[in-house]
Image (cartoon, rainbow, N blue to C red; front, side, top):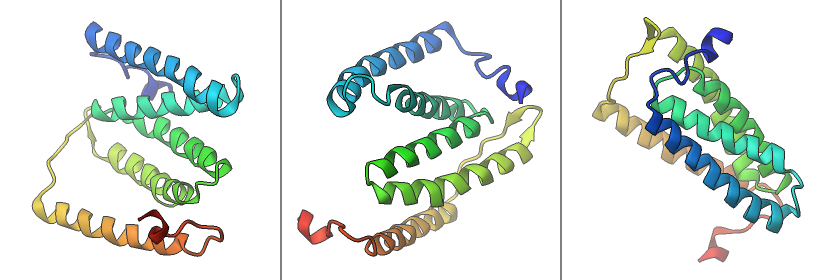
Length: 162
């Protein structure tokens, strides 16, 4: 595990590091003002919510750089966000995170690890057949998720939003 963590920021320019730190600083200010002071009251749940945010940012940045460690941060972010969604009654978000993103994190981690070549991942562009397959799976999954959510009592019907 230590070997995975070591070198995650290797090769980052000082401009990239400054941009990432500035983004985190700006989000921290907004997080304290909007999320903590308006939603939860002063600093209730601040640390957990902020760690979920930070791991989400780290997951995206590291995935864009082709780092395997992005899946570790992504798993914490996914489970943490699912918990926050659950306590706020957002059951669709809970289902999406726990039934899709958690399994895909596990599959992605092992597939990525298996395809490392010399410590680097070779990235390829998806072909038209793959893009169409992903589109069909997304539409079918959305319909299945919507159907599953229809069984939750006290739901908001789609027609009430129109």
